[in-house]
Amino acid sequence: MGLRRKARELALQFLFSHDFRRSGETSDQAAAELERFALHFNSGRKALPYASHLVLGIRQQQQEIDALIAAHSHNWRLERMSPVDRNILRIAAFEMARCEDVPARVAINEALEIAKRYSTEDAVPFINGILDGVHGGLEKEHAARPGAVPEGPGS
Image (spheres, helix red, strand yellow):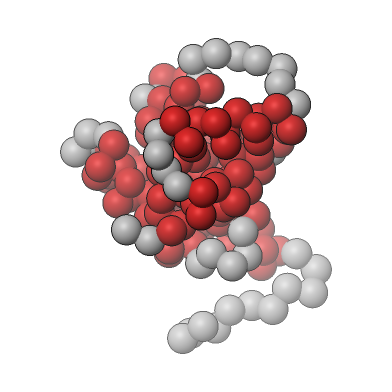
């Protein structure tokens, strides 16, 4: 298993655990708690920097990330989704929207692989459909920006 996959799984576990308790902790407190969490679950220190990037980024931009997911999850409100699926979606949507070094297809494929491991069989097509919509929406948004270079065939 690759280092980034371990980081994504660590982020998923941490975000999942935080879905059940609402706290007003600061970014520094969250980073320290994530480090303790990683050590407790023996996730390894090498995965921690990227997991921290994901967790802190998602927590800081959660309203925007959740709105992005909600815009493409027709007939499903976020609060009705399984906490595992919701957080897998958050990680992938954050990577697609904010991590320029992660191609959208990689974010989607990683989310699907993690869903196969941590969620139900039905979750994989559900997550895939939402993330395909998120990806399409982000591409349209990017193309509509002033000065954006349209992607042609084979790009």
